Length: 91
Length: 388
Image 1 (cartoon, each protein chain N blue to C red):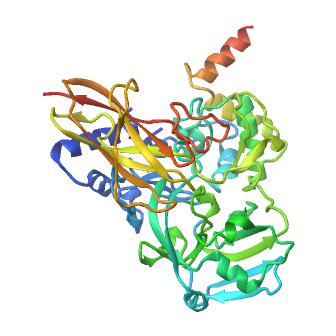
Image 2 (cartoon, each protein chain N blue to C red):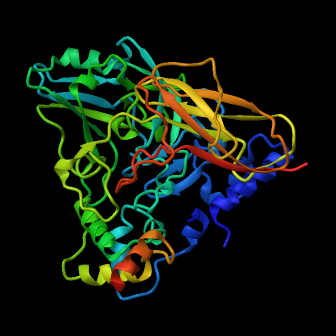
Image 3 (cartoon, rainbow over the protein chains, first blue to last red):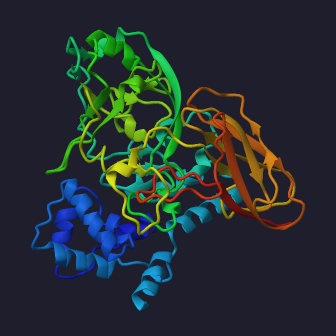
């Protein structure tokens, strides 16, 4: 992901856009999120890690935030992880 | 969309073709957002907190100029520190807690260490599968001469108790919200190595703001996270420091793991010394070269070990050739290397580099994947096209 495009790629609209921005961008640019392509499990681990690092994520918001992140920044099509997940899901 | 990598490649190729010495200076000048005081032509990996990477093409000098030295911050940099009011305390498991001013430090004998400092996450973007974290390319590494008192001398003044086993550092970084402070510790054994410094100078000049003015720790040969900037507090502990930057941060699995595999904390260890690694500074990746003699050159380092050889392959790894190592060398420093290459014919070439060190470690063809993407050190690689 380029810096130029990272800078120009905002958090996409969605019910959790504002809360993700508030919780996450206190410590880093939105590009740290928008440049990632993670599975739901990996996003969940990131939320835990960031909560431990001081991110304020309300328990009530966590599931919706996880859905927002996974929906918008899921694994890239054709990536090893995506292919693997896809194979697993069809088993 | 043109990616930055492509943009850089294009910029490099254009600059090489035009014979421009510093291609990125002009490029940076066109983007006011990239302008960072005290820095020149750097790749911005993050604005908040500021993380700047050195283009690998800059790595042709023994000492990295300060304006080209990478920057890694975990927090906001402190507002400009007033050197006349700055204090460094040593406490914890010591007989005599002590406070130093900058003037006090200046009375302590100066020791210098030339250290190749590398961020633990350097090369993270090359990990496959990808891992979260700052997506460093190749350039979160630099080589500089750091000077200041040995930490050992300061600890001796405070007289470490027998119970003191680890030494924790805290800087003046400004912590946002509920974020825990960036505190980490190193074992006493490393802290009292004469080469571990409380450095006040870098390449002969006072430290700059980005690099920890007025004083920082230098834990030579170790990942950069062990070299706390804007140092203000040293605490001797009876056990390793706690907190997220000690665990789970900066830890690696003891044995290779698969990407989906859960890793128990007890099966991990702290990132300490750097691995053996080389980078190709020239030619640039995707460069178009004219036939005839070429100089392939770059840098290699090995943390606490010494580089013994760097080899180059110009046929994708089928055969390897010894490079000539630069005359400048020092414990913990990187080593310049170069290789005179005359391509036999026009065409595409994959150039690989691999380093070997005094501990017998050899830069591997593939790096050991780990969940945080630390210490990536696979063969470096550039692809070039030779055309008459």
